[in-house]
Amino acid sequence: MPKKVKPAGDGKEEGPVPCKQVKVEAAGGPSPLNLDSPSGLFESLISPIKTETFFKEFWEQKPLLIQRDDPVLATYYRSLFRLSDLKSLCSRGMYYGRDVNVCRCVNGKKKVLNKDGKVHFLQLRKDFDQKRATIQFHQPQRFKDELWRIQEKLECYFGSLVGSNVYITPAGSQGLPPHYDDVEVRGEETARLREDELLPARVFILQLEGEKHWRLYHPTVPLAREYSLEAEDRIGRPAHEFTLKPGDLLYFPRGTIHQADTPSGLAHSTHVTISTYQNSSWGDFLLDTISGLVFDTAKADVELRAGIPRQLLLVETTAVATRKLSGFLRMLADRLEGTKELLSADMKKDFAMNRLPPYYLGDGVELSTPGGQLPGLDSTVRLQFRDHVVLTVGPDQDPSDETREKMVYIYHSLKNRRETHMMGNEETESHGLRFPLSHIDALKQIWNSSAISVKDLKLTTDEEKQSLVLALWTECLIQVV
Image 1 (tube, one colour):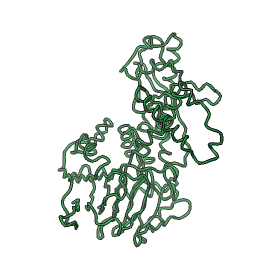
Image 2 (cartoon, helix red, strand yellow):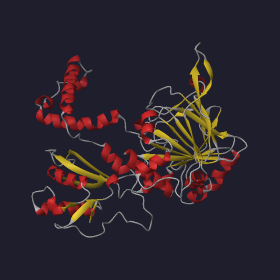
Image 3 (cartoon, helix red, strand yellow):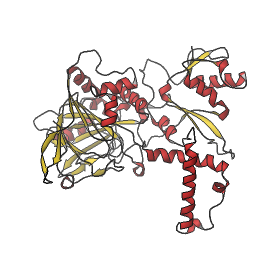
Image 4 (cartoon, one colour):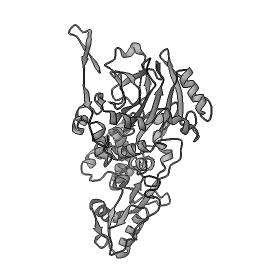
C-alpha cells in the first residue's frame, strides 16, 4: 500500500505511515466507464473519489492511488492495449523514435536500445525477451479506438490537449531511472513540442496488464517546468510505495519523482500514461493574452505608440527604460481590471488545431462535409459539436491589412487528423472561419441558445444573416432543427 515517511520528533525519519488510498469493491453494470459525457467519464475514471474532492485535495498537490477489485474494469483496461497488439501495429509501418522507443534502466541510467528506421516485430520481441527491455509506444490513441474515445472526451473535459504513452516491461526489469516528467509523456528525443518548449503535465496511469511496482518521491522542484533525471542518493526514501494491478489508477502532479519496475516471477506489465495540462499554466495564459491587451491599450494611449530611446537595442537595459516599462505594466494592470474579454493570441487556436477530432466509427458520421437541410432565413438552427468549437476575438491576421482591426475567429477540430495527434513533427492546419467584429453578438446568440431562428440574429440585413449561417453550416458547425 502507499507509504508516507514523516519526520520523527528528533528530526530523523520514522517508519512508513499509511497515506491516501482508496479500495473499491467490484461493482455490477454493463459499462465500466461512463462515456456519455466528458464529465461523466472523468467522474467514473476516478470513482469513488468525487470530482470536487479530487480538485480540492489532489490536483497539483499530491498523488492519489485508487486500487480496485473489479474484474469487469480490469478486463476493460486490458482491452485498451496489449503486448499482443504490437505485431499488427508494426505491420502498419512504425518507426523507432517516432512511434516506438526501446530502453532499459542499467545501473541507475537509461540505456536506449533503438535501432534505425522501421520497427520489425520479431526484433522488438527479441529485445523485450532477451535484453529485458521496456517498449514505449507513443500516442497509441492514433490507432486504438477506445483510447481515442477516452482521450477525446478528456480533452473536452479539461480544455487542454491529452496525450498518452504505453509502457510494456518484462518481469524483473525497469525501463527508466527515477525522474519527473515535463510534457504529456516524453519519448526519446520526441514530443509534441520542441525541446525548448517542453512544459510539464499532470499524469494519470492506468494499469492494463500484469503488475507494476511503483515508488514515488517528494518533488525536489515543486510544479517543475523541466524534465529531469534524479540520482537516488539525492531523492531519499520513497514517500509512497505500492503495486498496481489491472483496473487500478494512479494520479500524480507534475514534478513528482517516480520510478517503476515489474516484479520478478510474474508476467510482463503494461500500463498507459495519460497526461494533460501542458502549456496551461497562468504564466502561459498571461503570455498569450498580454499581447492583445497591449494592442488594445496602444490604440488609446499615445505613450505606448511613442518610439523607444535611440540605441536602446544596442546597450544594456537602462534604469530609465526599466522604470518606463514598470509604469506601462501598472497601467496595463489597471486596464485589465475593466476588460470584459481578453484577446487570445495562440492558446485557443493551438488547442483547436492539435486536439483529437470527435470520436466516431468508420461507418458513422462524416465530419468533413455538411449534411442535413440547408439553412435559410426561415430556419431554426443550433450549434453542434459545441465542445470542439472555440470562439475568440483577435487582431486581423491578414498581413495585407495594415489597420489590424479586430476580427472574430472560430476554430474547430472536426477535420483534424487523428493519425497526427500529439506528433510534433507532423504538419497541422487550422480549420475554421473569421468574421467582422460586428458579427459577435449574432454568433453569441447561436453559442448561448439551444436553438435560434435565423431571422432573430442580431445582424443588420437578411443577407448577412443567411451568409453567416451558411458559412457555419458548410463547416458542419450548425444544423437545422
